[in-house]
Structure formats: structure tokens, C-alpha cells
Image (cartoon, rainbow, N blue to C red):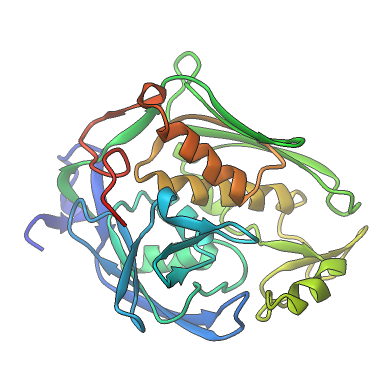
Length: 311
């Protein structure tokens, strides 16, 4: 790719340049809901490609974009016609943290591998492949006024920065009846460079009482204690215990980061949420883009999702 250069030679470029991987990298893992083995390959892409899922078994490409989300039950799923890719939120969170803007994601099944239930394996793949920058400016989506969506006691909101704050700040609270979870809250700045240590390793979780219902519905067929934290009221069933005392809220925040990276550009502003899930996260982006007075783009031009192509 003539427009790409090795990251080590890019110190003279603007820090806000679009980025992709240096080399392709592949891995195989089990799908959380299907239970089948899935092969995934991350491939470098030219600047302004965006993040694109490619179903190798169907020959269909699906943009990683909020308006392509068609299902948010227990995961975030994007589709184009009959082709779909589910459980994309952990990879999207890793790409957001690594500032990867352009990427082809090849997959041979309708969902991504779950690996250990966190974003850490995806971040490892990205770091192992290496990152290169382009000469193309990276747009930033600046929040200009509050946008909020609600459902019962749950809400998700985007707000402009206060004072001299920069980057993307997130504050999230959760509350579960299971005593092992209870009420938890966490604040995180995605621009702080601590995603790998603070957020990436937090695993997805479920209640033991819900497992049979999920499997009866044809879901969680690949779930196990190797890729999810299972809670039975006050007890964590995993022999190794938790990776963080508040692993549950950290994982929910990980999901928010991944879901909101479907905006098509990094967000500059603040996120505040309580008991939010994939559905509310997606509704928040739809509400944001519903009115152009809510945002503006800086440091570059962005065709999508502001001028959406037909899908």
C-alpha cells in the first residue's frame, strides 16, 4: 500500500492520522452462541475503508456501522440482507482502544470467536500484527450538546466536554440483584492509554439461573467457565475467581466502548450511563445522528455515517 508507512517512521506526522494493521493475522476460536469453531483474519485496509466485516463463506461485506445493527439481544449484531455477524463488541472495543480506523475482518461464520470472553485476545492480535499510520487525517466526532435515551430505569447519554477535558470519558453504573455483583460504578478515559490494564481483561458474565433458558433458546451453546464469569447469587462459579473486584461493571463499560465505536469515528466528549446494554447503546448513536446539531467533525472529512451509503 503506497499510502502506508511503518509506525516507527511516522513521528513527523500528525498524531491524529488514520491507522490500520501492519500485517494480516488470523486466529481460531469458538462462537459463544453457535458453539462452532470460527476462523477470523484481520487484514490491513487502505485509508478511508473504515472497518468492514467480510463473510468469507457468503462473499458479503458488512460495514461496522451503527445503522447496520439489527439485533442487540445478548450481543451486538450487524447484518446486510441475510448475512450477519454477531458478538462484535469485544473486537470493536479493542480497535477503539488501539485507534484502528481501517480494517477488513474476514470471518467464516455468523459470529466472532468469544475467546476468553474479554477484549484482551483481540487486543493481543492487533498488537501482534503491528499498527501503521497513513497520511490521511483521522476525523473526530465532537459532541456539541447532550443526547440521551432511556428505557425504564436505564439510560445512556452523550455530553460535550466540560472545561479543558479532552478525549472520550466514560462513566457507568450497574445494579444486579445477584449479591456477587450488586451495585458497581466505574469511570474511565479511553484516551488515557490504560485500556489494556483497566478494561480489556474484563470478561462477559451471566447468571447461573439463566444458562438453561439461554440454551433452550439456541444461545450460549459455546459458553463455559473458560469464556464467561458465571454468578450464582453471592458466589462466583469460576475456580480462578474474578480478574478485578469490579469486573462486572468494567465489562459492561467495555461493551459501551465497542458499541459506540460503530459511530464510524472516535468520539470526543463524555458518556454517562446506568444499567445500559447493547440496545440502548445503539439507540444512543441513532439519536445522536438524527440531528446534525448534536455533533461536528474535526481533523478530517467523514462520508459515513453522516452521508450514509445504501446498505
